[in-house]
Image (cartoon, rainbow, N blue to C red; front, top):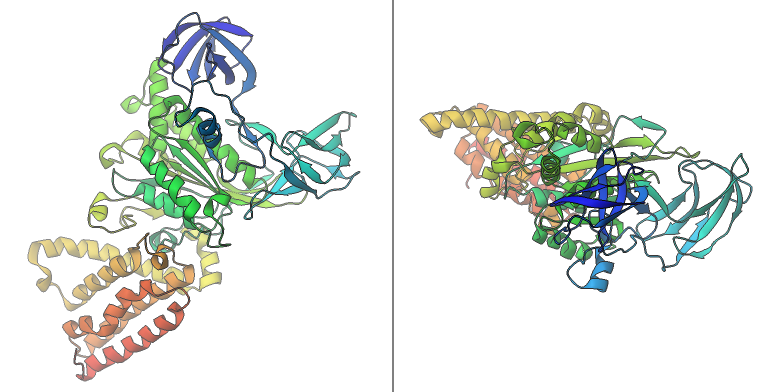
Length: 589
């Protein structure tokens, strides 16, 4: 079925003669067969957002509808892949057209020629339902790809055989109750705007270990949770997200570069193949899918890229894996929504954003969670959604930040003043929060001991007290403070500089395990307690601040991973002896 273009306004194209088309259908526009999607219908007139450059397109061009919604191909070959916003493989396109993406190029997302070794996990005659795993493919050394029965199919396995297959070859034949046969391949398709189904959703109860101390200790994120990373230009949003992608203890990472600068995506593409997965020593890309829709690529495709990424993530979640979706940034996606809404002449909301901005953000974040997957084996999977927000001028009172804060449960507020002071990650401990701490308490208590959460609360209290004391210091100076208050400022400084601050470019400090975080924070707080006891017994603050152990604590985070337990124990013993010397008057530092 085809129609005729009557109007072109940037990425918005209006065509008539499409009375049998449906909203969300994918269409091909003009002689170059540009990819587009129908946004709304009025009679036989369709408003289409085109995912490619429309220059040169004019009234009279032919529009053909495919009759299918925008969908992604799900199967072996996605990992280690780089796609654009509508799942076109950029590496293959470059080989075909050079470094510039040609308009209308049509390359399948999954390689149709590569052979995959299929190993069945069910036998002929077995009863299967939607979601059941019928076999596996070793996609990369890091991930075993599970081939599942597509949604809507159940019945008896008529035939299944091991061997080498392409993604289009039939690997299994299933006959349903009506006697109809269904050919199952290694690949299945799924509409990106439709949530993939599951049996049941659970409350997240396990933390995502990111290796970043300010996140894991102070503002933890649960696996299956949602988080936002808002911050102004230059505050380190992208570096924080890179760290999360590198070190988070998840099985699969989906990184969506949505509307950000191309050089940032280049850093990812150059760095990730060089990075080693800490769990198996393999390149990190072997469990990563990159979706690149940078600021110089078509605006309309930014909107699709978010849904493309979350759908791929749900597919791996349905295999029983822990998946993290990292979107950089949802503000650029919202700006694409605003541009298309304006061209559609819809009633604008606050700051020109469409009135449905909050509901669209909610639709994205609500696809996160810990779920019981479809199938008879009762496997669990999790999907964690982390979105960067880029408010203009760092003003988090703008609509995208406010709508996001109402939805997510973890808020890592980045602060440009911390970034300018070279404190990274530049997460402000006074404005950030996590609503998962109560739900994760039982895990922390059982795995790390009850002291962990107690130390967390104490550290946050000291940092808050430091903020209050700084106001007094600005007025009357630090010398006017009491001994206890000066000690609080010193301890807060240690927490900030020796614990919260991390160097992403130093291997030892780039990642910190939970056990190491607990031991490091415990030493700092023990120093605070011992100093307070010593002051009561007559010790001088200047001597307490000058003990060698104070400097050793500051250097403790650079101790190699295989030595820190022994070194930390030695620092603790030295600290006790040196503080005891200040009380007896024997300190000579």
